[in-house]
Structures are given as C-alpha cells and as structure tokens.
Length: 182
Image (tube, rainbow, N blue to C red; front, side, top):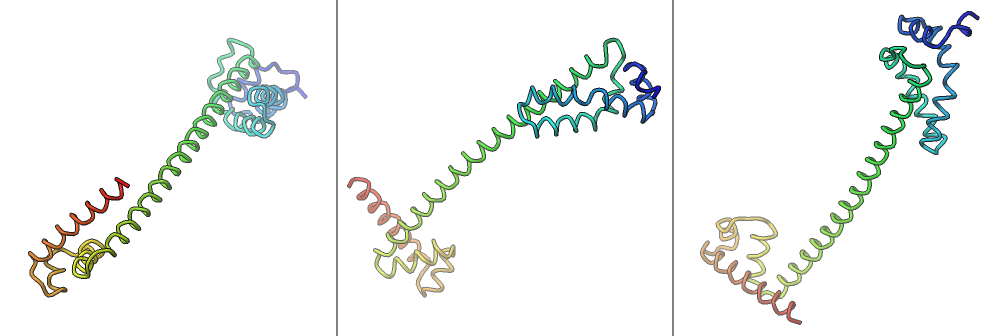
C-alpha cells in the first residue's frame, strides 16, 4: 500500500535501483496516459496498443534517462510522443517502400512482357530465313555456341558461319526497318 502513496519521482528512482514493485506501480498509474496519447497520435486502437506495449517494454531502460527535473508525466508525454513520431515515420517509410516495390514490379513486368515480345519477334523473323541461315542462327544465337562449334556441327567452315551471321543481322535489320515504316 505504501507504493500507491509514493510520488512518481521517488518511484522512478526506486525502479531505476531495480525495484520491480515500484516499476509496476508506475505502469499501473500511467499506462492509461501512454495509451491515450498513443491513440490520439496514431488514430488506431491496435497501433496504439502495440505502441503502448513497446513503450512499457522499453521503459525500464528509458527510465534511466529520467532526471526528475520535471514531473514524470511530462517526461512520459515526451517519450510517448517521440515513440509515436518514430512509429509514424516507420509506417510512412514502409508505405513508401511498398509503393516503390509495386512500381518496380510493374516496370519489371513491363520489361518482361517487352522481352517476351522481342523473343517472339526474333523467332518469327528467324523462321522467315532460308534453312541454312536459320540453322546457323539457332546454333549461335539460341544455343550460344561460338562460330567454331557451329561450323563443326554444320560441317562448314567457320568463315561461312560468320558470313551467315552477318547475313542474319542484315536480314533482321531490314525486317525491323520495314516493320517500323509500316
């Protein structure tokens, strides 16, 4: 019963000295103040409850900074307001990151869609080539073989593979230019 009549500054000093009962008494007295202010600043019951709990968990450590130059309630207002401001900044940062993720994801999907269109265009363009150029293109472009490897498979000279690839580039460039001028 003595704890209930002890003033806040004395309880804070006792709590700082490790007295758990003094700390419990402080929480009993001031939890409503912490929650009420958190609710007013956050306008959300669940967020206010979470913030009030976070403050209470951190309070033993934070209480070390209380010097008793002002009323404990003044200090608690400051702690709660600072915590609420931090909470709002974090929530804003998370919202910003979420928005940026959505933007990046949309850009990635657009790039993937464009890449798919480009691949489809390239395959359809390659299908218009004569057989010798198409076979060379499939080995060099699609399979990633070097000219010497493609030449060995096709049983032709490496210079012929290089010439066919040059013809392929010319053909694709002409096709792209004709489609662009449509």
